[in-house]
Image (tube, rainbow, N blue to C red; front, side, top):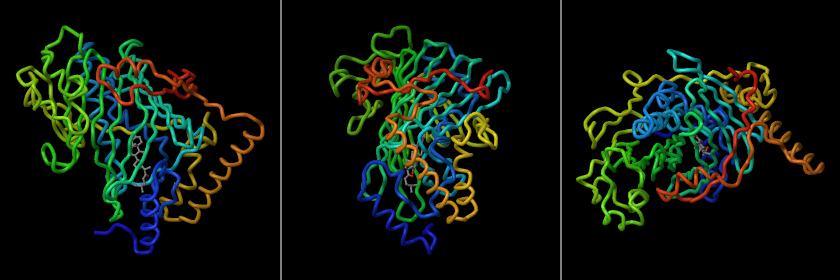
Amino acid sequence: GDAVPASQRGSWSSFLKSIASFSGDLSSLTAPPFILSPVSLTEFPAYWCERPDLFAAIADAKEGEQRHLAVLKWFVSTLKDQYTSRNEEMGSEKKPLNPVLGELFYAAWPDKNGRGKTTLLVEQVSHHPPITAYVIENKAKGLKLVGHNAQKTTFSAGAIIVKQLGHAVLTINGTDNFLITLPRLRIDGLWYGSPYIELVDSSYIVGGGHSSVIEYKGKGYFSGKSHSFKATVSPLPGMGGNSIVPPTKSAQSSGGGWLGGWSGSGSKNASSSSLSGSKELVVEGTWHEASTWSSGPESGKKFHDVTPTTGANKEEAVPVGGADGGEMGEFETRKLWQEVAKGIREGDFDTASKEKSRIENDQRQRRKDEQAAGTAWPLKHFKHEDVDTLYEQLGRPVKLTPPTDDRYEFLGNYPAALQA
Ligand code: 0T9
């Protein structure tokens, strides 16, 4: 059926036309009310830790292969929350509020069963294009995840294709680093006004002497089901002391490096490669439900499970700002968008759009004033660096594209509300 309210059909079809003739930053396009979400993109990094037990378990896993697998399990378990939770909670994917420069979100997951307290700090570090930086830390367990996100969107065959820019680095005890790259999104169902996300292409996890390439497919591939994935774990070249037999020379020469050759469009997948016979580790399933080992010593056993009845529980982050925004003041995301969000939730779209214009005008005025004064908006918690050497080092063996990326270094200046 058609999810577009009769009175908004005209504005929905003009919105779709403007998307189709537009590439780049979709966030600034005005969309009809029915598709608006009352939540800003600055809250999205919370998805990384909505299963805090799985995050904490990474620190308890033995360094090397075991820890790599714990990182993979946690990562795969975040995907349901990242990419299907709006459909579950609001009926379809919705257009998030476009954060302002300097917007903040501080939140935490409490300590439970000795897993330690986990904190989340998010700052919008750019408005045009939108870039969100975050740090998630569990000090008791020595875990720290620092990353940033941006998107490049294009339109193809009726769907929005979202290339994610940015990456995350998870550090355990200050030295054990894991690089995490992000999948590509395809937003379908636009015509009927009920958008949903399918993940496509592949993403990587590199660290602990191993790399995982995670390939994503929708209906009609792999198992034929939506939200399918296949993760292939292999030792990094030159890393001994693990159970996996390295590939042969012939596998290396096909496809420009054996790890690189496993992924990307057009390349054959791992199980059909000349590695058969070696004990490769492969996990297959649907990322919004569960997966099993399809190869390796655990073959046939369950890997991850996020189904509500049998899987790890979902726990939403608890914001620490309070009604007045606390230390964040008017830049605390829920405080900033309060009236807009209320308007969207209650169907009072006049108020919502008036309040949104007020926020945007205030932003424009700030930028003008800064320009006149020859100053720039200072970032509060992060420092931008053009090159992330960890990204380059960890990405090299798997031939990541792009081969280099920038980063936002966390300054370590936690607000009182997130300390201890
Ligand atoms: C990082 C995530 C990201 C942000 C969102 C593409 C999107 C903005 C970015 C990539 C998170 O870790 C994961 C989940 C959802 C992504 C959003 C889905 C979406 O639709 C928006 C874009 C900008 C739109 O709002 C497109 C128009 C809209 C009408 C379609 C629903």
